[in-house]
Image: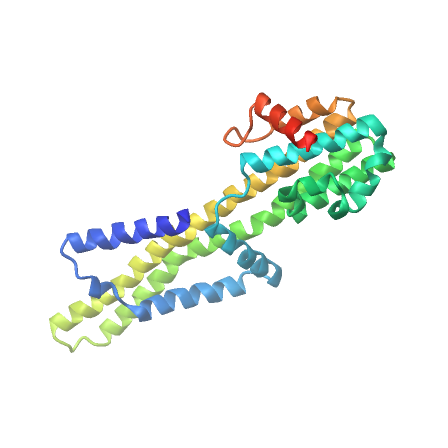
Length: 286
């Protein structure tokens, strides 16, 4: 929603300011210039990226129109789930969660937390390392190294759409110049026309530069920044699981292990100690 509002503000500010200055908005309506810029950008996007990068970018774009799903409520749900799993391990042993981990959809513990159960990536990450813990063949240092490598891989994959959109935005002003040059070439080939008509042709050519810069810094560039912010948010979920499970492996009680996970969250979503404690109690009593 904020993306749409931002675009409206950009358009209202630029075109509204132009109109208030006495400009004629009809002069900016140049569909051919827009066609050249958007067409060249689309072609460059296809040439400069492989199929995997293109698919990843197209999958990421619709999510930009939605608000962040990584809220305080979701993090509290995650930590309550981890607390309940680790409490069961502490009371009944690691083998007691084997059934929960192998079939989380049928697990009475996981079923209490639909928000986490619906996130395929975090569920796969969590259950994979819980299986390793159940196997008992790896120590905390080996698991931590493996977690770091997987989180790094996740981050690199998430950076692909960021870089693709950023490069596309960087190229927009150049495509605008190309469109403007084409307009100038058309103008120079029409030097026999009256000065008034030549002035219109030059103005039309300059619109290409304007559109390229506006699209780059008002529309495409901000999307790359938003994608990067969402990537950092998604990484916090993995880090929270990592820190909590490692704290448990190192012998800390479930309440303290969850506290370790709470501390890695961004301050804007991090629940207070008492909030988390109350939420865990309520979830456990259900």
